Image (cartoon, rainbow, N blue to C red):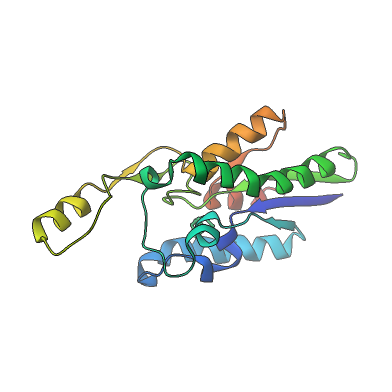
Length: 180
Ligand code: SF4
């Protein structure tokens, strides 16, 4: 039996992440190492989801919030990116005696790949040099217990295609692989 996990792109390739002080990602990177070790130890096969932010905005992008990605063109691109992935998953799932699709692993806090946690805020317009405005933009940032745009679309596509694939955080994926 081949066991397959779908992972958000930056779990395998953190070069795709928005540029930031990586010290702030220490906890995430610890989970990532633990997860990747378990994946190798348990001979789990991987499908890497495309990174929608890197594809759309490249390496020079600002950090965004969920609100900024909730526009029809972007969402349509996400659906297109996920289509070929889900067609592959559908193929694997036609042969349950040979393949087992364990789930999709999210990146919590991301405006796209978070599942239980994303970030929202009133981020828009020219940043300018008005300190009050800059502070107001920064202070509007809120972590909310909701999925990011990409995971929201993925969840709907999974549902519409009547597939049974759980979406889980890295911590939940570690728990699952530890029980195998
Ligand atoms: S969009 Fe998703 S895959 Fe891309 S950097 Fe953000 S969390 Fe990672």
